[in-house]
Length: 246
Image (cartoon, rainbow, N blue to C red):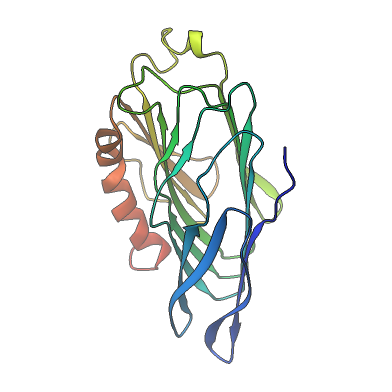
């Protein structure tokens, strides 16, 4: 992997108002503040170069201070291009402070047929923190049968205790069509709620976690179909994160 700089965002509460304490552009993404209103802050992660190419190591570090509500926006998706025998990686490290909230609805992550990708997400929640994240992984472009090798891991901790530990290993592309894997589907859409727990799971796509959280996930041949299947979960759980529902 080539050496790269992480994109860093640190926002804290200063005299009752959210303030971006640190904004550092990384090699691949630049943080652009959109607006601040009281404890609420909104920020866009804007691409600086075509990514991901062989050797790229895209890293994002997010620190949400106590009492802040941060919303992250991605104006465009990420495409992992043909690595020509190489590989690339994407990782996000997120800390959500006491009573803070994070909302991150990521744009689609497309893995082309020649790509070889490693993804890792780590989220740490402090007391009373809540987070809602959405991601859509697309295996292959429209004219491709499927994407290249992928391994995606996620670790979520609440007060240092593990809440969700997940390892999605799709590196063997020949096995994806087997029963119990993904079949002919090429899109995986997920919505993850942590730090709050819905009263119940609704529909076939939702699962309650053992602790304070829930996961909605759908497989479909096309991105819009998978995303539509979990849209209702996103809308309902947004109210939980914002304290508008119980």
